[in-house]
Image 1: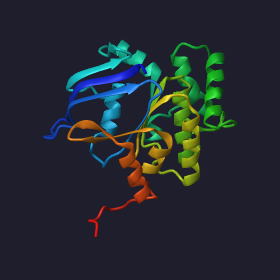
Image 2: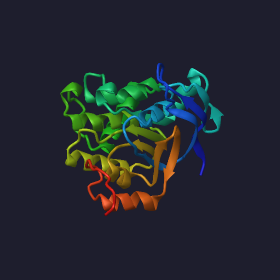
Image 3: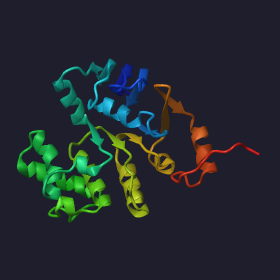
Image 4: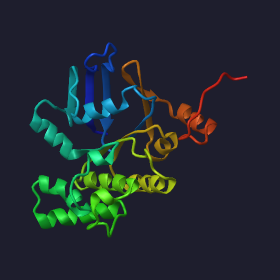
Length: 243
């Protein structure tokens, strides 16, 4: 399996913070791999995604895309054409007046003509089951509809992989299940950050967390034991001492 993205020796801490988020962290993401990241608030999950996609530059370390170092803005552009990023807040991603304009923006930015961009946009809306939304006003959509639209805007770029930051935040069960169905139909690599254990279990096959400034793989048996013990994995719970 070919390595799509590689992080090597990554160190990062926020200004005026005495605690490093990452300390000599390394990570490999293979093509078509589906990875779920879990962990408490503040452990660095969102920061990890932003480093992967170049929204945050590490203090030290190297990033490789398809074996080539990502150094210049051109390198970042080429990587972002193939690895899409879905923000936690859809309003950070959506800015065009109508749904079709928002989804067509990415293909137009890649150099497609208007007709090609509209075809790709409609295909992407079809993938997230938003046919008929083309002329809807973006800012008047519901929270769940905006989240699906954010997904469509990234799919319109025809990426090889996607990074998703807390894709189920604030969703009702129907829309949450809708997104699970959409993601499981895609033939793409995924890295998903979420507090929703059940969602991670249903959409990914490899599980990680972040501890002591490094990414740590979670054994599948351990992960599934936790899910079994807490059948409502996306519900708040506390761990107590066994009697």
